Image (cartoon, one colour):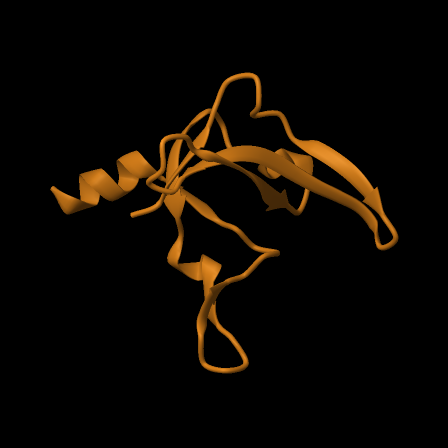
Length: 91
């Protein structure tokens, strides 16, 4: 299970102007098994969708099958599920 952390001080939604309009995102940290987590950007439709501080994992709806039948992440819809929900379902 891939753990993604939203930490205090980095949890506020941010915006960037692009040629297609305003793009909202939130910073998170993906624990990829190395010594340090990797900083990532989590796309948001609007600032109100920002996730609170906590530990998360990827929702199954984040995955899609690509053109060549490869499993891939949808880069525009990175949905997160609180890790506590996953742990409570397992027990």
